[in-house]
Structure formats: structure tokens, C-alpha cells
Amino acid sequence: MSQSDLGGLTTIADPTRARILRLIRESDGGRALVGGLAEALDLRQPTVSHHMKALHDDGVVMREREGRRVWYSISPEHAGRVDALLGGSRRPVVEPDLERITEDLAVRFRGVFGSETVQATVRDSYGLLSRGSTSPLLASRTAAFAATRLDALSRAHGRATTKPTILFVCVQNAGRSQMAAAILRQLAGDDVIVRTAGSAPADDVRLTVIAALDEIGVPLGGEFPKPLTNEAVRAADVVVTMGCGDACPIYPGRRYLDWDLEDPVGRPLADVRAIRDDIDARVRALLAELVPQSSPSVPQNQ
Image (cartoon, rainbow, N blue to C red):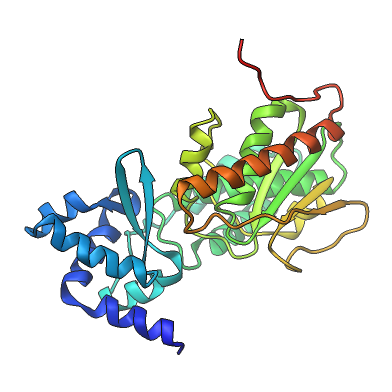
């Protein structure tokens, strides 16, 4: 165990900090304000701020500023240690109704795939998403992920489409790839099929990423981190990787781009904005190549 790991464990072991982490873990959205924590613990805000500084300095929690408010959430790198200390998981997970999900997708893909293929894809998708996940939305995410995989599989097996398919891949599928995909969807609309994946996906998209997109009017919608699968790569015309090394399989006939981008994890919103703007410029250039008639440009003030 490294010295930094030992420091993190020592920090977490303090009884007051353990109570703080439990409140953050169980709060709505997995984040909390110092004021709310102080009220819940019946402590003075300076006392809570002192403990939050210690937790932040050791990397146990992350800070995300929204205007004048500063939200704290548990760092993904320490989530396992926090769970081990506090016991249980961060949120209760309800077992999805895989039979219902399979039946609905069998109707959607009627004439394309048999029920056995749909069932196998649903169960495999659930298995991939549920590894270490504490999301309360596991059922709907399983359905969405399985539908995306079945659609990609159909295209990989020759289902005709004139629209280019772009796959953005990063490590956690919670920052760079989500920003690139959201911006491309906003710019291209229905002209391009956009997918994302991660070599080691996180539980949720970073709050600072959502904030950085929202302030320029780009919605993330119901997107969430998804594992990288072979059919997603086979169905893509262009695969854009961002820091995931050799995790992405190589198939002939695909165009591969590697974008050297900073990772927004744990960065303040100002840094995430700069990463977002870098991605925005790259996405616009890529779209101009894929759909030349669109030639997107930054709107000018009237």
C-alpha cells in the first residue's frame, strides 16, 4: 500500500469525517454542501470546513463550484475505501426486471434479431453495468445500453445506413468522451450517429462536465458511462480515443483518431471549460469533414 493510500485511510478513519462521508454518500446525487453537513451533524460550519479541507487535501473528496456554492462528493479513486470503512454500498440497487426489458426490446428489434439474441444481450449488458455499480437507475440503463448494442450489432452486420457513425472512447466515459458526443449531437442533429464508451467506466458523468456543457446550452440528456464493446467499434466509421491507450480493439476499415486531451476528473470548473472548448474545436473540424455541407461555425453576436 502506498504512502498516499495510508494517508487517505488515516483521514477517513476520523469518526467525524466518517460521519461526513456517510452523509455525502447517502445524499441526493452523492454530493453535499458544508452548510447542510453542519446542520445535519449539529456542528459549526468552520468545524466542518476544517474536516472537508483535510479530506480534500488527501483526495478523498472532490470540490465542484457552482456559482457561490461549493459541492463536495466522494472521489471515485477512494470510493471503495470509503465503502469498506462505512459498510454497505452508497445507494440501494433494485434488481431490474430483465424479462420485461427483453420483451420490450424484442418488439423493438422484431425482424432483426430473435428473442434469444435479445435476451443474451440484455443479460450481458446488465452484467457489465452492474459490476461495482451503485446507481439506482440500473434497470433503465440496462435497457438503454442493450438497445444501443443491438443497434450497433445490426449495423455491423450490414444493416444499411448513409449516416456516419462516430464512437468516442475515454477511460471512464464520464468526461471527455461525453463532452465530445454531446457537442457533436448538438451540432449535427440527426446527420450523424454518435456513441460513447469507456475502457473503465465510472458510475456517473462528472458534475463539472454537466455544468460546463449546460452553460453553453448543450444538454447531456440521459447519457451515462458505458463499457467499451466490440460491436460498438465494429459499427463505427470513426473511432476517437482520448487517453485510453490500447484498450480499443482495432478493426480494418475504420478511421482511428487519438485526441490528446487533459482529463477533467477532479479539475475545477474553469479547467473543465478549457477542456470543453478544446473538444468543441476538434468536434467542429471533424464534423466539417464528415458532413461538409454543414461547415459549423461559432455563432456570432448580432
